[in-house]
Length: 448
Image 1 (cartoon, one colour):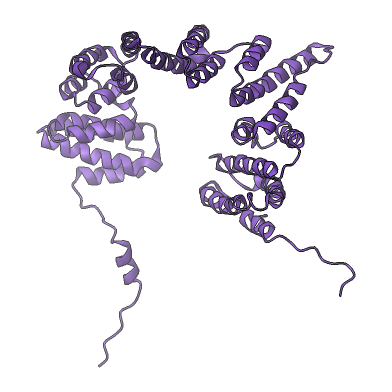
Image 2 (cartoon, one colour):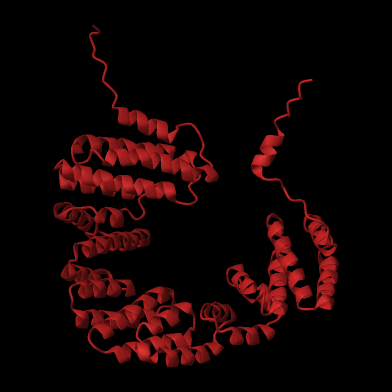
């Protein structure tokens, strides 16, 4: 027997290494399936937390470190790998809590990763682990963050700038943790110390709402709206605050005030979203009248929002009237997400309009020179031709043909297919996959 006993390797460690494929670069196209495979190993570790928390914690530590080793070998443009690492930190935290490890040591370790985060895996780590930290762990984490906020002697401007950055960063982390702890008094005190923002008011309002104190929540909503309106960078918070305000007004019986608020927002920005918000506060008996009122008001909206809103609510007369006034250039400026469904919907009843929309969809691609989308452009122009001819607008189609030939004759990758469509040349249809496969196998000669 060997004088030194060889240490047995945990089979989970082998699984981690195999899943991460060290030394192999993972391209963007392969990243999704790669992360799925790695997640499978992470799931296996999560299953042993209850029975073997110490082993699970050790494995998570190895896994997190190994992911950092792998980071330079994967194109993580989608961020899926980074989200996986956040989940590993959550599992590690739960495992340490299950093993009754020291909470302060857990917090210190988390902070060390947040401070030295070359790949951005720990950008929202405070938010993610805040979801799984128990009461003792959350208190320890908050305690360690507070220590980082203690003021230090400042000697020059550079140190002051660093101190301000440090205060903003760790102050934001502390706010996140205090919100998770639902510690309103401490949260407000911290805001008094480092500054109150619109998003802080939203956080406090949500906490008070969850405690069934809508009046107190409304106070914070009003403060938040005032702050948001003074800063153009907080328009999203203003929208959320306004939405929450209406919910709270309805909750305390001021439904009419909530309705008027929703109406004001719809008038200012008519869209499918503000319409839906408006109808939340309209009584069933009044929905028809309010619908008509909203559709009339939406005549002043922007083109893209009008199309989406009117198409969704089958306001076809308004749509046709609008599109008859819309130029080809304006149609080309619209996103295909709104114009494709519109073109399909109007094909039967208004082929002349669908023809113009399909032409715009095609030209949007060709004018931008997006050659990889030429197949889609050809599909659009083929539909345009069918709609022009169906509407009896052969002259309009010939005008389109002449215009395309004049402006895009150099784009050989598009023009060949375009000329085939103009000439009604039969399109080559690729045989089905299985038929192509069968053709590869030579037929056996018949025996004589």
